[in-house]
Image (cartoon, rainbow, N blue to C red; front, side, top):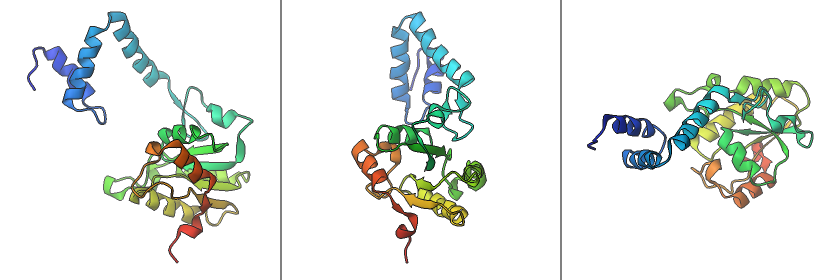
Length: 205
């Protein structure tokens, strides 16, 4: 791709580093910004800088938050005896949109993937165990994507949790194998949570 400006080329290069954004899409985005006023572009860039500088991660569940503890963990309306374990913040947002779940969350910030060099120590598993050791938790729901990495992570977590006196369940497989939580439609995802099953029932006998 030939550019008439080095400044334009540099901006396109930065945008194309975003996931799912190729050079052509990046060029469209940059040209769109150039058509906007300087005030609008500065507002756009300032919002990203402010996000990066001020965003926090909940000290309890590791969800992205404006404060040290997120609104979900602080809400007295949530059922504090249930924790739904998810891969990242996008999954929290997807589940919240179903309005079918009123418990708490725990964000792992990834899945176990030996091929990518991601092991249990790279996830927030230890803090999950600490939450369970408090004695208040009665049920853990695994809401991880139906992929090899998701299943590997669930299997590992189940081994870690099976000695605790808690119910361990997983969302019903209304989501096809290989499907990711964030892309599931709200009705399917909501039903999967509402009709969750004991994890042991999903294991091959």
